[in-house]
Amino acid sequence: MDANQLDQLSISFPCPDCSGEISKPLEWIKNNNKYWCPLCHVEINLGGKATRQAVGGIIRALRQVQRAVLDFQLSIKD
Image (cartoon, rainbow, N blue to C red; front, top):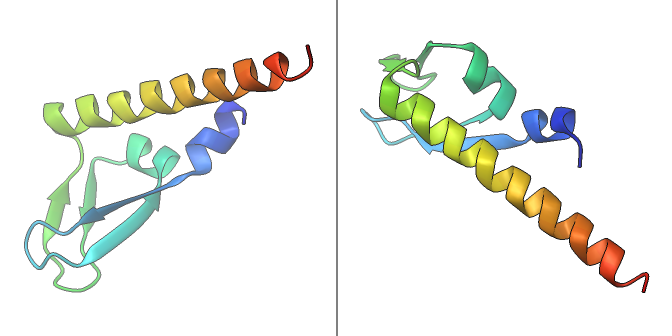
């Protein structure tokens, strides 16, 4: 899985107001600071420090999984 594929992975999160499930590609979340819930129309702040740190953590974790899969693929070739 390359960086573009990682960016296209959808991340689900609940609306903080109505708890409705929202799903957006990681790339979209990285590139947008605000979103309006399609169910209750509350504004959701995606640009806060905690949100940005969480997105960074998701990206780091996905890259670790990507490296682990590659290591596995290489190990079974031996």
